[in-house]
Length: 58
Length: 511
Image (cartoon, rainbow over all chains, first blue to last red; front, side, top):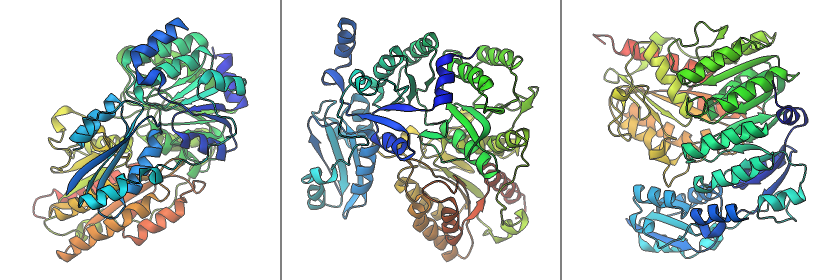
């Protein structure tokens, strides 16, 4: 059985949030896709263990 | 020759942007090689492997950028490194005006967003993907280097939420006509594609377009989805979704051979599909033979899909020589095929074609371990090299973006007197080089001249993955190849088959 959220994506198309390579946002924008690019930075000064702890606390 | 580096603290740039910076710096006067990376643990390791040991020792933090280079002398090196701000100049952001730094802030601005496109370094990718899935967003996860444990738990989460997780290590998707990642511009139509490989999806979607039909959706699953550890979560969701989606009439499923348990699950699901599903398990040697619509390779997958969609498939006419006249042109001591591929799936598929033709080929990414090249930089006998493999891309851009290393290898192969054929691929589309053929054509011309200087010919064979809707211009790229003396085939399969047929003739005694 197909998931309603996936059917909805295929029916209504993409409305994107881009995290990382800015080029991907630019390309979606060029195609007329609504996209918001996040000015992403490695969280918690790049400390992956600290990130995990923060996610659990918040 | 000197190596030198500079560190810029607390500035984040994405990997593709940094690859382009490295490409531009590499082309500067007096610079032989340049690498520009965020100083994550994986990237520092890669820098050391790429010969920048001192840069790899830092001291640098994951939020710092490292630019390392090899230059003719220190004056040229410092001319770049002392003015890095000019090389790292950022462009404008789409929809700028609103600067957000986290996913939750972004959802505050765009509460109706339905897809997160994630391409942050692997160390951080699972976290961002989890946050997106928890918000019921579909995810296109380009990042690789996500641990198997994280991948399995993310796929499980996507299943619970009823959303698609395309990836990790997903290069391409097309949803409702919009290309994500390294995708091509194709006509919309009745063919839905599900694929574990980025260039595999690109080849099938562009061939379907050039054969006169079009694509409803192309859903990338990530390269591990059909392993038994992951269990085909995304592939099964995609099969269900495309079976229900009214614009899709025919479905293609392409992957390397699935795990045994997962294969059984797919086979079971196939029995209840209402639409025809073409299955192509590359490298499987007939695994899908008894399935309703088996396809041997990417080209057959596309032509079968177009045929089942009710269109008589057409391909660009090729004007290539016969095998015997090609063999007659090649110099008497030249006997081996050397494939240098930008697309990993093209390298894999070519190996399958050679194996089936009975021609032994070596590779850095071989079908079986015994055929692995001891040194990926040195071909042996017939060799098919995946130039996008990690060994060539640590600290360097992927060959789809920057052809520097492939150009050097083209000339190196031509210098070996045993090289008879260079087999190449070119991939167009979003995020690929603006002029893939233009980047490599000077090296191809020099390679051919080198052979002609020795009084014989070197055959250069190629295919181009793209459409006339791609910014690079399909026809323009083909014309440039032909001007460089390259024989262009309608698909990667055709180029590989021709190369294998010539290889068989060259191997016959008495030539």
